[in-house]
Structure formats: structure tokens, C-alpha cells
Amino acid sequence: MATPPKSGLQRPAELDQCIDVSGMVDPEGGLVDRRVFTDEAVYKQEMSRIFARSWLFIAHESQFQKPGDFFQTYMGEDPVIATMNKKREIRVLLNSCRHRGARVCRADQGRTKMFTCTYHGWAYDLDGNLVNLPGKEQYDENFSQDDWPLVTVPRVESYKGLIFANWDENAEPLEDALGDMRWYIDAFMDRDSEGTYVVGGVTKWVLDGNWKLAAEQFATDWYHVNMSHASALMVMSPSGKGPKKEIAERTGVQYHDDHGNGAGFPVHPKNRFDAQPVHEYYDYDFLRERLSPEQVMGPMTNGHATVFPNFSYLPVNGSIRVWHPKGPNKMEVWAWTVLDRSMPEDVARAQRLYNLRTFGPSGIFEQDDGENWSECQSIAHGFMVGNTPLNYQMGMATVGEREGFPGTTSELYSDAAGRALYRRWRELMSTPAWHEK
Ligand code: FES
Ligand SMILES: [Fe+2]
Image (cartoon, rainbow, N blue to C red; front, side, top):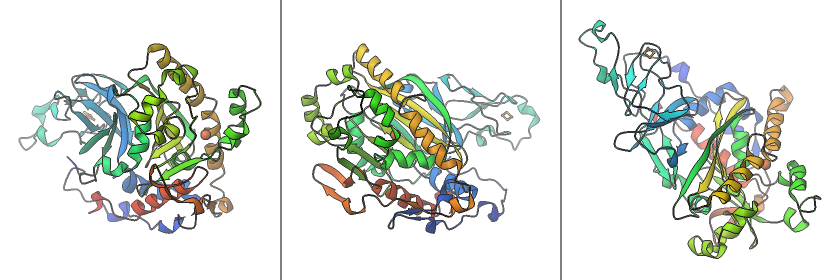
């Protein structure tokens, strides 16, 4: 079932009315109106025009081994269950009972034969069909339980182990939406011919701050690293005095595209993994062959990235994460650790711990980032603050093509991917979605 289920109900159009927000961002001039982070009406429109029509990250393929394996997550604010059905296909179902709307699955993850609502007992199979309901004889002969399945997300596709879903039945294929971004993702997710897996469950934490603050930072912001993470860099440098000048001032590449995806990374032939056992494990010459020299010099070993709208990753740490929107002022971060399947146990352990120490909820880098977003959000409701535009003008002059790096790029220190993210945001927020037609 692709569309919201049909019924004889009629909702007044005013309740779903959209507003013209196209003037709130100016990607060409590099300006953003701060109310995109605080306004309730804008947020509501993001749910219907961005989250209900974009490819959203659901889970990693390794989370599903056997039929009945399930994982509960969100698409925007909609709870969904991802599960493997008897044909071993991944189904994504709206986790809301068709009777009175309770969630039919409350566990985070597990294995089951069916999802039984704990309110009145309607029970659904792994494909979302309503297979049983207590007291069925109390309904009249017009009632057919076939008419009341869980709503199914019509499109589920994956790329290199990453499962995405989309409510828009006619959405372009996931691979097209990723476009050239795939080359950058490959540098992270395709280092090992055996593929990847996730380990250690999902770490979840709540932050004060609009989801876009995190998404745009991971798309576009290497700029904050030396300042915001100064103390972490000091602790991690061998001398204890902070990184050497050539590391602190290194240059690199930032990628962005029309879909609002972005990635940035320092480029240097000596780029390496930070965790020593991981660094020693990788055969860089082999990887230059398997991938390309440019991928190894750049996005394989370092950097940040966002797949529009709210999926981000960090290759050197092996972190993938979703910024779940929870109202305009809050987000819930869900983070996984990704490892290569071929990694021996000690290397896998080193990478897992490195990720937790740096980008776990209390990681030495993660804490700095969360603090910044909450700081920006905490004052954004002020009248004058809200009426003072923000500057996204860095790197205007460096946008162009760079040999060896697909797509449109700029210098590493740049807001180009941030501007691209808001360009995509403006485009989607200004165009009616499939469910409005
Ligand atoms: S709300 Fe699920 S059975 Fe009633
Ligand atoms: Fe950071």
C-alpha cells in the first residue's frame, strides 16, 4: 500500500496547507534564515515534503539474518518496523495498528513470527497482513480483515549493505539519488570484498538542536575541527601540544550534488587510519588497486559525509548515524559501528573502541559537536536572533571540478555542501509531494 489508505473521510485542506518557504534560504548568496531551525510550521512541512518522499536510512543488512528478524526505527517521526519476511525480503511497515493506532511492536529489535498489538490483540504477519483479531465475530459481514493490513513502505533498496526506504512509490532509484556520492561511499563501505557488518547494537542519545544542524555539519563542515575539537586534538597528538602545522592546515576536497548530499575530507598521500591496529591491518597498495588512489588519499581514511536528508557517516571511525527529527528543537541520534567482515578480531575490537571513544555519545569529539548544536539552538528562539541571517558563504570561489574526484567539488574548507543541502531543501519544500496530488 503506497498511499495513505483510502477512506470516506475528508480532512479540511487547511490542516495540510503548505507555506512558501523558498525565500528562507539563499544558497546562491550563502544565507539562511534561522527560523528554519525553530519554526513549527516549517518543521511540519519537512515531515510531509522531505521525509515522506526522500530515501531514508533504515538499517544495515547484517541486522537481518533469518526470517522474522526485525528492527524498529523511524522515518521522520513515523515509527516503522524493518523485518525479513519468509522470502527473505526486507519489508518496512508502519508501526501503527490499524485499529486504534498503537504500535504493534515495542521491542527495539529481535526475532518474531508476527507482530501482535498489545491493546486489543490484532496480529499481523511479517508482510503486514492482518492475520488474526480477537472477537472477529462482533464485526458485520462487510468487514474483511484483508482490508486492514499495516501500511507498507513501497520502496526498499540498498547500497553496499545500507538499507534505505522511501514512501514515494515513484521515487527515482536509490542509486540515482546517491549519484556520484556512491564513489565516496564506496571508499568507506567497499574496502572489503566480503562486505561490512555492524557490531555492538545501536547507540542512541537525545540532543537539543534541530536535525539540520547535525546533517549540514556532517555534509559541509571541516572548518570547525581545529577550533571545536582543539582539546581532543591536543590529547590525541603524540606531543600533547596539538597536531603539527601540516596536519592542522591540511587541505582537501569537499563534494556536493543536486540531491543535497555532501562529503569532505583532507587529501594527502599519507592519510591513514587513526587506530594503530587498523592502520597496520590495511594494505594500502591493495586498496589503491581495489578502489582508486584518490579514494585512498581522501575519503577512505578521513572526513565526514551526509546523505540527504539525515543519514551521516565518518569513514575513519566506522560510524554511521541517523539524526532522527523530534520536533524542531530536538533530535535523537542513532549510531552504529561498521566493520569490514575480513577484519581479525583484535583489529575489529580496536576499530569499535576507537569509534566509541571518539564518536560514541561521550566520545571526545562527539561531545564537542553536540554542545555546539545545542548552543546554537538554545538561543535561536530570540526575536532578534531569529531575524538575523546566518552566513554560509565560505568557499564560493573554489567550487568546480577536481581531477580524480567525481562530481562537483570545492576546497575542503567550504560551505558549498551546506548550500547544496539547503538548495535541495528549498526544492523539496517548494514542490508538492506524491501524497498531495
Ligand atoms: S489498537 Fe491495536 S488492537 Fe486495538
Ligand atoms: Fe566535529
